[in-house]
Length: 221
Image (tube, rainbow, N blue to C red; front, top):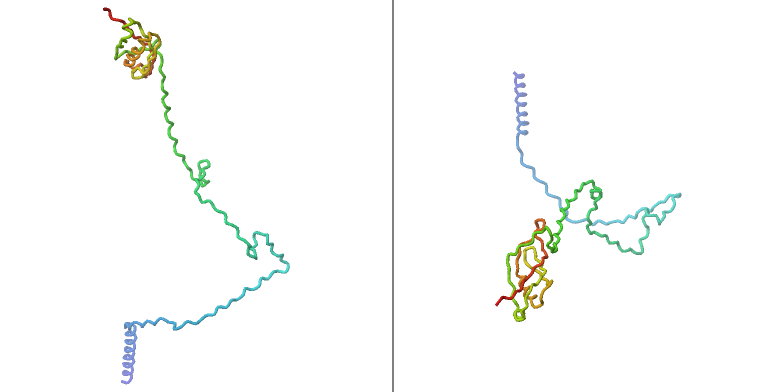
């Protein structure tokens, strides 16, 4: 009987201890209280101490530094500082050598050259009517006015003129070759009003020079 009691007591104590351990593991406790940030009530003054650099020790056999050498830093500051050289920052076009700008290996294809402009047409000067050329046909004829002075003086005859005709068939210039002085002016005024067909040379209209005549004849009474 006492032995059974001891066994029961051990089982009960073991169960109680196990239940307490499990309850502690499963229980959710309160959140921890955060710590207050540290604050400094006052500042402690700090004194800076200038520690001198140790002296430069030179080897006994080492030669003194040459002040004229470019690789040696100067010991003493310069007496004067010269003016700085201005640098040209203007952008320059990249140089192209054999189609490669500045040797970067980038092939540059030059733009195609524009086609040449057609030559300006050469103005054709007037040509004289020669053998083999078809003379122009008169489209508009204007008779000359008989001068009153020539009628009174009973002057009649033929006035020969040299006329320049443009590509449209208009008379642009008249020159007297032969004729009576009293009949020249009226002959020129009449010829300037004449209109011809354009004269073609190899299928292209050209100005021409041709000889024309104006006949002055008194009427019979």
